[in-house]
Amino acid sequence: MDPTTLQGIAATNQWSAIGPELVLGCLALALLGLELVLPKRQHDLIPAFAILGLAGVLLAVLAGFHTVADAAEPPVLFGGLLQPDRFGQIMRVFFLLTGILVSVLGVVALAKQRVPRTEFFHLVLVITAALMLLVQSHHFVMLFVALETVTVGFYILVSYTRTNARSLEAGLKYLIMGSLSSGLLLFGIVLLYGAAGSPALPAHSATPMGFDELHAFLAANPGNFLSAVGIVLVLAGVAFKIGAVPFQIWIPDVYQGAPTPVTAFLAVGSKAAGFALLLKLAAVFAPYAPLVTAVLGVMAAATILFGNLAALGQTNVKRLIGLSGVSHAGYLLIGVIAALHGQPFAPGAVVFYLFGYLLASFAVFGVMTHVAGPDDADQPLSAYTGLGRSHPFLATVLAVGLGSLAGIPPLAGFMGKLLIFVAAFQARLYGLLAVAVVGVVISIYYYFGWIQAAFFQDPLCPATDEGRPARTPVGLVAGIVLGFLVAGSLLLGFYPGPALADLLGLR
Amino acid sequence: MTPDLNHYIVLSAVLFALGFLGVLVRKNTLVIYMCLELMLVASTLALVAFSRFNDTMDGNVFVFFILTVAAAEVAVGLAIIVALFRKRQTVQVGELNQLRD
Image (cartoon, rainbow over all chains, first blue to last red; front, side, top):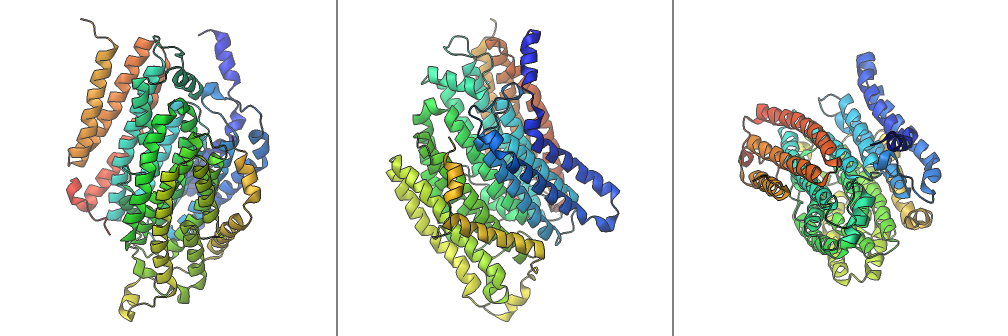
């Protein structure tokens, strides 16, 4: 390699482009330093520091949003590793919001546990930064390293309450399943790399890990066996992250055992990352669209049916929300398939759905954090009886969140489903659409069972009421955040126009 | 006979399949963990072989990243297994069934 090539690559190292991620990384380290420096009674400041830092970075990203997003030709930085574009900017905002909400829930939930605090926020910051890099990746090495940073961070977070055997068990299950999916993903990447670098084939490349090079190779070699196997393995690896059937087996156990804020992070952050990757990879794998559509189509139908049917019989709300999350992954998969069919607004519909899902999920998880006792894994549906009478605010937030998840108009979840279904209709995916409608109808049953328990059921007898852990009173910050989530769900449902204008111009 | 690319790929595919099956069938968490590492090593072998025979350098560099990631994964994974063993005195998958509805 001659010096001019190296200079050319060095010139693309624009560190300011990953400034937000760098700041988050430094902030994460600073938190650990603060714990050493601050006197013990001021340790409550550390979460505030983390949340304010995340909010500051969010404001900075929003301020610079249009300079990056409106670039006519998104630049490829760091020698082809990163491509910050409009989609990346939107997802950055998404993950920063997720990070803030997880931290707020973390403050509420960790107060009930005897565990170290600082490391939780440290890990949330690191994972948020890695998620933000992941959605801007333009190269398989970048994708793999960022994804593994996220996954390893989640191993620790899931087993965070290490005095609780169930949290550890969930951590172990997530560890095995996560490593398995990483192995599949990695082997898929290796096969694609091997195929696209083969000198015997047309359009082979010296740097076959880049998305552009791989796309060019796939377009020139339709029906290459090694590439087809690689694509299926990569899709399987990502399907684990989003919890699509048949890779959903870890979801109920891990969701139940993990501390509630971590469950929320998994449900929203990890799932959104999976779909952001799928949208990116769908564009790269476009020359193999029939294969990808077949794999994802079967997956989507099975995921919707399994998620909804399995959620019907659940009595633990964390398992219920996990399995209902599986079915949401199915609806989102339909959006990805519509995007593969060239529907121009399908990627925007998927992102809009994810934002609606973020608002609704965190509203529900916020209520769950307040209702839960010291043992986070033990959250039966019966703990919610009489919530409407004793805690009207929490019950209202819960109702709006669940209603939005169920897709009741005029909430954000309804608009998200509508957009995805319209995209699917225009892409002529009638079969999948029928399955999705059946799934939505089933889901209304269990979502309303939960709302009914909160509003219309009295505690069966005082005895069960006494055995129930005390509900945490809602603090000022948590109350404001929950109110913001409800307002957001209503606003996105009533006035989706401005958000849509930004999102639908996505591609 | 000098081994060519296909030999390496077949060997790595066999190793990968062994690891994958091991994860599905074995009951001891530590053995499962070894099988997971075997899957990563199989990928690494294929990467180096592709890199050598296709004359592209990316693969060799990627191996370093994979080794680092695997080391981080093992550090966290073994810590979780040890913590779980101290709590439950078992690492058999069949006995880890406290999470249920």
